[in-house]
Length: 158
Image (cartoon, rainbow, N blue to C red; front, side, top):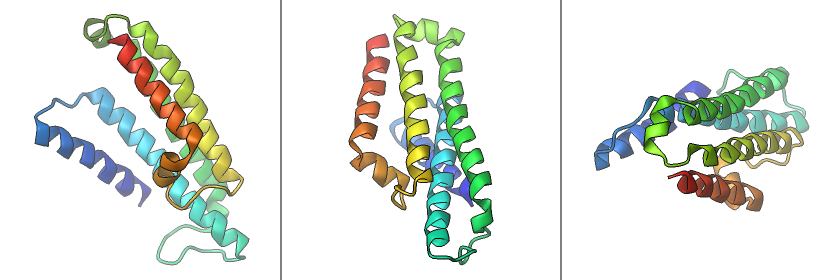
């Protein structure tokens, strides 16, 4: 179900681009699917952490068990890191050199994204993540600052 959740979030981007007539790049779709997969997994991970603290073993209506926590943590962290890799490959791609005046200014965005993915997974591992990681990210001061910095570096590169 996490792949379905990630796909549905990515479909929103596709629909939004279609609605305003904007071309969607392979890079944005690749980045999005891995970020959203990491967020979907963190959502399931958080649910299982709460079940574990309540001494339950299985999520009702879902195929996940408390024993899956380690695996979900690995898969979710890896998905988040792959999104950073996709961003790095994008920055270094030939297409970018023609679209941005100074693409090297986007490199700090990779480091910030790497920090943010690591941070949200550490928070989740400690049991301090809300049920919805997107709501958490919007309320979390450090996440908001990371988002602003990433956007700022991307704009500076233009």
